[in-house]
Amino acid sequence: MAKFYITTPIYYANDLPHIGHDYTTVAADVLARWYRMTGREVFFLTGTDEHGAKIVQAAEKAGKKPKEFVDGISAEFKNDLKLLDITNDSFIRTTDPVHEKVVSEFFAKLHADGKIYKKKYEGLYCVHCEKFLSPGDLNEDLCCPDHKVKPVTQSEENWFFKLSEYQDRLVKLLSDENDPGHLAVYPLERRNEIIGKLKTGLQDISISRASLKWGIPMPFDREQVFYVWVDALLNYISAIGIFGDRKKFDELWPADLHLTAKDILWFHAVIWPAMLLAYGLRPPKKLFSHGYFTINGDKMSKTLGNVIRAKELVGRFGVDATRYLLLLQVPFGSDGDVSFQAMTERYNTDLANNLGNLVSRTLTMMEKYLGGIVPEGAGGTAFGMEEELSPVPGMFDRLEFNRIAEQIQKAIDKANRNIESSAPWKMAKQNDPALAGLFYGLLRSIGTISIHLAPFMPGVSQKIWESIGQAGNVTAAASDYFAGKAVSYPVKGNKISKPAILFPRIQDK
Ligand code: ME8
Image (tube, rainbow, N blue to C red; front, side, top):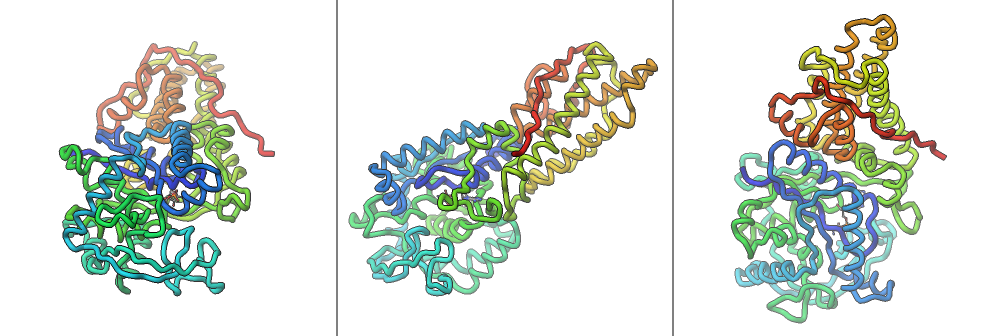
């Protein structure tokens, strides 16, 4: 089976990353872990986008040379990956020589094939978006609607890509599932918006800058550098060696899934596939664009001082809970508000009260009533837990992270309710012979829950798995479980070991 190739947008290295950026990466990591667990070989790519005017400005402000500046930011982004337990297989930087060579060679071919041309152009340029805006894009103050600053009139002789030639082809490959080059875009409402906009017409786009030095020089015109966006998009093929090991490239391309946020969907669903078609490559198979985080209703921004960074979340909740909480605030695909308070509430209800409590009281009572030894089992299933969690695989395929969490919480709740209704403290007093079966079922439930939580909370799931007396790795058990093989847990006679409190309650100040 071909490898599953999943990517995140490469992080723009003009500032320190915040949790909006980490959100996409955590989502990609959860999926990568899920696909590995279910038997796929995965190649998960992330990286940093390091050219363009905004980098020059930011470097100047920091009193550094652009390369020195992006080296620092790229390292900061890598720190976030470590902090969040991200298992990317590769990390690409657009200043890597191998990437720069790919950009040059890719466009040298488009140049030779007549797919690009030079023309004089005057337009309204927003330096923050790094793009020309049409008058219709401006808000009522004649400013860029995203950055609230007036664009500058810029006139340049630039190279243009004949994007307009791909209008019909793009409409077809985005809408027709049976098209051999079909690119599936989710959520469907955003796909429909893209198709609607495409049908109103497509302009050729400028792919070079004459007034900028910090970029990849064009091999056929030394006065110009490539526009940062076309340079950045090519990371998805430069990182897998399009002009290197062709076998590796063919194994991975077309990508199975590009994750993006909604603001950059046009680049990924229109410009990128057109560039690939022009070169003679198949577009990626699937794009999923997620929504935007706001903080207490406001856009995250340094000016407002409301930026939340991964370090603060991990310091407060720990890495596993941070991953869980980041993904579950809003349905993936929708916009939503995040706040420390909402995350703390969710941490206390889902993790401290529900999951933590289930594990803690089950194991405490096991020690008290059964000497901490796994008793004879009542058989394979436990409280219908496996049925309860059976929709989860389909939810992973549809990237419904918040629904997975709901499903898992329902399962935990069910096990907790079983404790309440069975009242093992009374059963123990009465020497009820059913006590052993009840605890066997609870341990089995806890094991099943940890298997399902493993892609979100790899560390905590492993701890829970070991606490019910299991040796080995929870992900290995999960692989067998999802392959439909019998997995033996809990194992009669094994000793359980109660972990330190998994999720200490947090008082919100
Ligand atoms: O766009 N909520 O990089 P980037 C959710 N370099 N997601 C957010 C967010 C928020 N508040 N803020 C940022 C770029 N993101 C380009 C990509 S790919 C060839 C080049 C998301 O650092 C953002 O939309 O500005 C994007 O998906 C990712 O973080 C990186 O954004």
